Amino acid sequence: MSGIATGKLETVVTYLEMTAAPKAPPPPLPLCRIALMRAEPITVSFYRYLYDTIGERYLWWERRAWSNEKLNRHLAEDGVDVFVLYGGGVPAGYFELDARDAKNIELAYFGLIPDFVGRGFGRYLLRAAIDEAWLRNPARLWVHTCNLDHPAALALYQQQGFTAYDQKRKIIDDPRLTGLFSKQSGQSPA
Image (cartoon, one colour):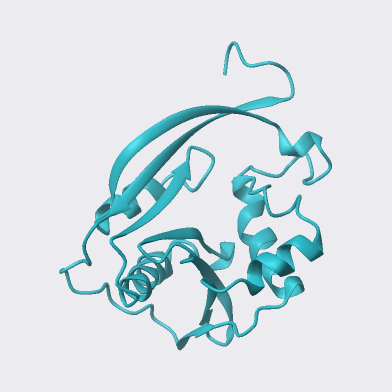
């Protein structure tokens, strides 16, 4: 990342949208007992567990910086829903839909607990999120991803029917230097 100031990270954010529900059949179920449940209501501590555990590798920092009060207010808003996927009785991942603008629903967060990556849960959970959003009859569903996310994220979104409509380069403060993460965060295990 030449030309980037010390303490900064360059991110390339890709914005994607879907303007019609997918017609392809859903992917196969993961090979274990699963349950997908809307958290009603989700507690701040459980949300932080999911967000922090999933986001550690990808430097998800925005919600880490929020106070508990701010996060609680957000999660309690009408139109903000969190669904948790369980595999074999334990949390495997989650997605958050932001339908406060009912015609332009955002897939605000989507991810898997590291132990469940590469086992077929991602395709299943993403399709579940897409199907849940389209049950609400929006004009479009949108999501964004960046080069700090899982290397297969962009391709997965595109395989499931999302189309890129914008891309922006952003320089952010390295969250590992702000105290939100350890210096080893953001690195995939070998």
